[in-house]
Length: 478
Image 1 (spheres, rainbow, N blue to C red):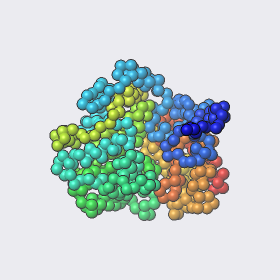
Image 2 (cartoon, rainbow, N blue to C red; image 1 turned 180 degrees about the vertical axis):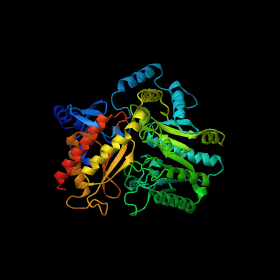
Image 3 (tube, one colour; image 1 turned 45 degrees about the vertical axis):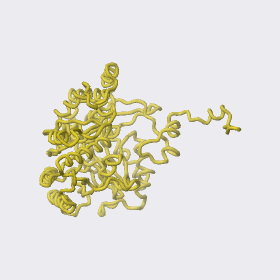
Image 4 (cartoon, one colour; image 1 turned 120 degrees about the horizontal axis):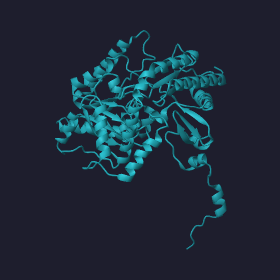
């Protein structure tokens, strides 16, 4: 029997192998939500170093990170060595242990610290490795809570349109982003979606109070229509990221949602994967907007993304009900949940955030950031239809037809403007931010920088946005 032989000479095979970092990544690394062009045609940035609010690529070029990695690098890029010391010490002492019927110091201490920061009676913490896992855990905890109360018919969840809650099976089912979920449907049954809080394009002359009344009435109507005794939980981000920095229309909105949950026996889950740990100028977005959830899911900022970590903060009532229930335990587990090294990194991250007054920095600089970005929007009102957001999370919605509040197809459509003009202009300016076309067809530009940003950094961020908008509109002939 003759075995198949590769006829290529060893020297040729070696010479065909990619050598540069970008080429190696394109050949072997499958990247998150990355279009084919980045693998085949476009330049692929390779970042090798960070400092304060900036990252540097492998050619030495500096970029202002206007997205804090992905809404997560709260401390920027200067404190890695200090967090790394805590990581190294933990690795030397206890590199791994589970939280399956045992505990270890970093997980116990971090859970205590999180409980101190969280609102109300949210005193119990289940650890995961990231945001999707955290929302999966919250789904299961809500279902088990109702089962153990004798209300096993409560299997449905209500989320908001265009909201993003993750990419795993249950978390993706909660998503209100059709393009993310439709390829993988059917997903978890029983998820319903209600309007989000976007006010741009609401009826002309509608007041914020009227918007709030509409949203709460619609939510209650959906609860009644589905049957309140079939609904386990409502999940909402305090500030909704997808759709572009969507804030509550009035201070009464979230307390109104809370009141409906109490009226109908429904749990309220605050997805704070992005808003948790300071992004809005409070430790938690639910505190910032004045409402008490039954659970908070978190990730990203808990360790400034220096290590992967997430989790669920639940009320005493929920956990005690489950512990007293039919199984006598929360019926969920993750090998890496409460990993001691990740917890050590998070403890050091929170220590630095308190020492450097990072959350206070966001609260103090929020008005100045708003003013500077508003000036950019005013200068580029030809294409900026709306600027919205709160804290260190802001979005520009771009339009060319202001009357219709839409991006017209001519002289350049939204996709071509983003891909052919805006993204290159941002790259040339040296600014990293999130650019996308929203569910309604308009380009969105999001900035959500590190929470250590200073007034000088805000000035630079605004200047880079101005430069990119100027170049992109000129290039597109707008």
